[in-house]
Length: 233
Image (cartoon, rainbow, N blue to C red; front, side, top):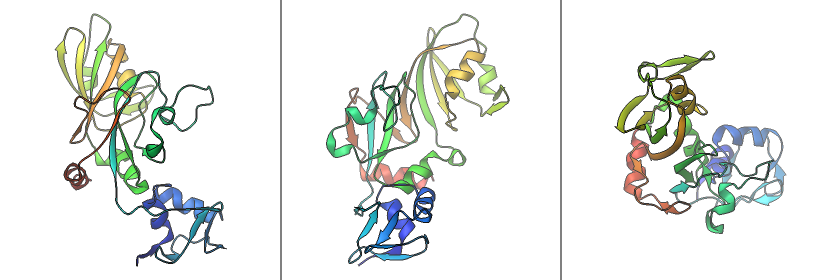
């Protein structure tokens, strides 16, 4: 028998983060045993209570699960795209379509994308304050590169970007580590360095690495690696 706050229950189900769960509850969309609740501190017993969202039963998740998905090129990290482009959920097998993504990889970026059944974990892994390192490999254009702009931290169009670790691993090929996750930050900052990105691939997120996982495939992260990641939060 497990008693907990309704907001925590919803977040643990993977439906939403704790913060979003509170908003959903306040909207009147959640009911316990057919009685609408609007207070996130309401206690629910998942052994006997039936919790619904807009009339649909919410299933509690018994165990946190984390997966690595190798996002292909020209695929949107979203549930639905108004322009009709392919999304990750068009590619994922049915048994994984309930998972939520952690952050985003843009349409032209490939590589490691984390998916989980835990809404709270999505929020924690996405927080810039946790400074989780994400490492990418990039192929860039240009001839006169000024990477010190990125290494020292850049301000572009009024937006501040944290310093990036940049290692040149071949001709016009870079390994880049960031700790923030602003939208398109690598493309924006490298363009300012005279090195427009031609190809971008994420190979790691914290202690998790994509390894030899094929494009479009998904694998479960071993529990020991999940535990190690959680210790850094």
